[in-house]
Image (cartoon, rainbow, N blue to C red):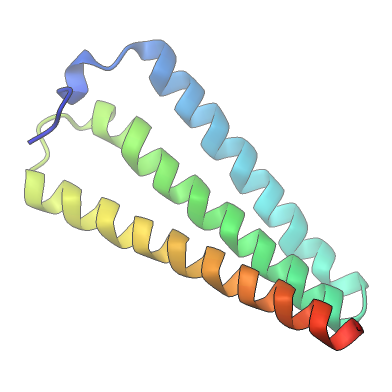
Length: 108
């Protein structure tokens, strides 16, 4: 069960969630595409940060925007999608952190 039904989410929250997800997506794509122009260490770090931004944008969009646009979606389906997106986001953040630590250890 939702603590706050999705049809009670203010439109301002939906618009801000959409804008936040869009900003993260654009940042993620920019980092991902910029990774090809630098050295291999910076390339992998930029790629992982781009992936984190893209996964975060997907999760934010699912939680804030899609819930409002499809308020009658079954709870199991909604929770499965949000859980998978959240798991992917956490996995990408852990991978980016591991890669950053590995990069710093190699450079020292």
